[in-house]
Image 1 (cartoon, rainbow, N blue to C red):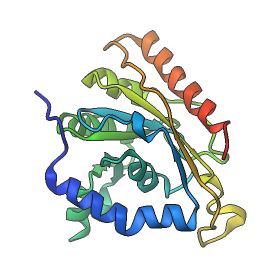
Image 2 (cartoon, one colour):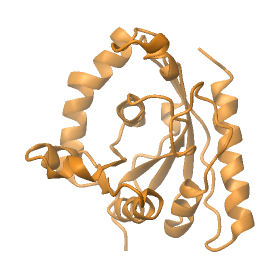
Image 3 (cartoon, rainbow, N blue to C red):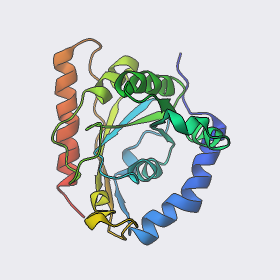
Length: 212
């Protein structure tokens, strides 16, 4: 039987990091706007699926969910003392290079069974303009295994944070739009996996196209 919430220690760390660092940066520096935060279930397993254009995306996305969101992180980071404990508490899970798809799916399922929300970038990697054009099946596969709902989210503006080759993050406006919950597909049904994946991609692009 899965748990209903992530560990309490992780929840405490999430709020400390959110209110001391991420939220002030998002709202003061990036002039962040958030729409649809009331649509996020605060308990139970949840697959948060979004577009991806910047290294800033994971903390911004987690900040806007009002609950911790577990993301994959390079295995090497878990060999660093103190950092290992910190990112583990914050919900990160290790992924080996070269086997990211399989290990990430297993780790995400494990996080969901522990009561976490799991974050999955539907393109699998960053895109230049932030739009979704080649969605991967990973989020739908994870949702099917745990029978967790999917929540499409659009991150608008993050693709410009390091525009023009800048080494320093630019104070561009960022808008986060959260869509309606999508039911998980059936386990083992390839056609349904593809259909739900496209439904998520269409929802994200629809939210993205609303702009600022």
